[in-house]
Length: 168
Image 1 (cartoon, rainbow, N blue to C red):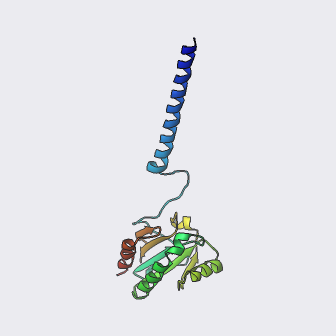
Image 2 (tube, rainbow, N blue to C red):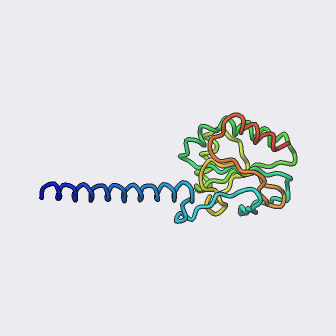
Image 3 (cartoon, rainbow, N blue to C red):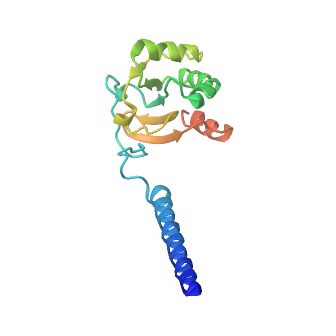
């Protein structure tokens, strides 16, 4: 009788372990392979049109949208590259740079200045509304408002070079 009870308990425990393992696998697959559908967040990609209130894309062949946010340590750590990017944009008369932040105008301007960035065109924008799901994000836009390239996160040196060379 004891042996039968022990086997039944072991069988129940093994079934419970298998069920838990299957649930964990299902969650991992959903989050990593299928993407999270519940968040409603979409990352803008090449070929899509983008709209930033008050920005007229037609004034320049290329516009770089710099999406950053106060409190983003990757944004702060990328400031030296953004200083180089500003110089590259200024060297190209057909290029423009606009910084978009979710903070209020005065707060956004203070943050940009604290990074040592001299950017004239700073806009308060809901990053979700332009398809930016994380900061920092750089978006290269043509004069028709069509996204040409997107770079997300703190970039390694080779990706930084890719960004600056895309302005030529």
